[in-house]
Image (cartoon, rainbow, N blue to C red; front, top):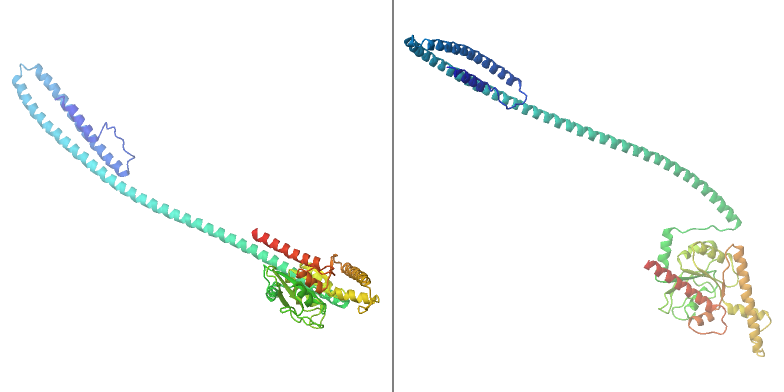
Length: 448
């Protein structure tokens, strides 16, 4: 019977899971309650086992006593053995019942623990879902807060920018107001100055607008690949004859500029050079100092500010009209050439003033030549001295004066070599050099 005790203890240990090395996570409240119930069942089973152990011990003592009295009480022993065997069988049945009860309790405990675990898992899942919802709501609220912060910062920057713009607008309006006040003062001062200048006989300076410049270029048919020469000056100075001479044409040739004793050029004339290789265009302008064109309006009225070069032509006297043209050309950086025309007529007049009559049949040719050279030198010296004095008085830089006659200039332009040349050859060379220099500058700008 002694083997029943270890067997019972082993069964109870297996029933309640004693000695297992497996570790479980922290139990839930339901698991703790299930374990307590299982421990109570275990304690009750142990008590039963203890009772059985006592009974087994008593049986063992009885058997020892019976063995010592085997001989005498063989029959009693046999009967007792049978009774003990019967009792043992009963006890085995009781033990098996206890084992079955323990198994049932263990199954019940496992079922309860499994149910408790599933419920805890379900609650844990619900708690995790709730945590995720809370986290999502928190993140959404955080994003909304960040967006609100960004909007607030953006609105603050916009407000600061608007404030800055408003301050700049105020400052700009104040600056505009000051400029307007200054312009008013300057306009009043300019008005007073203009009135004073008009009283003193000084004409105002007019600056063309960009629209006026474009209109003037369109009027003269300005082209970048051409060089535009304008011949300007007072009325009756021989501008048309000079334009014809520059082109190597007589005053009666077809396509020549119209000439006459009185002012015949009332509108601007545009004349191309007969030599197609020369990309020059000559312009015969109406004369200044007429009722139609007052002196001080001449430069702007004729649009002289768009020409590439201006020949300032005068006949007898170098006047304020010529000074005004030169001064305006200097403002616009336009090359100018001062030319005195009708040199042959002026020399003849000087010779006659010397007492020589050209129709004198007995005149000595050498005397004629001497008188001519004397008159020529006088004309050149007087002309250059007069022009220089006028330039100094007008505070303008000194520049060369070309003294020419249209007949000699026409011969030079045609390639001839007239005998009575003064400045005709140099004038043409300087004009063509100016045109060539401009063409080189243009090609340089294009290549750059």
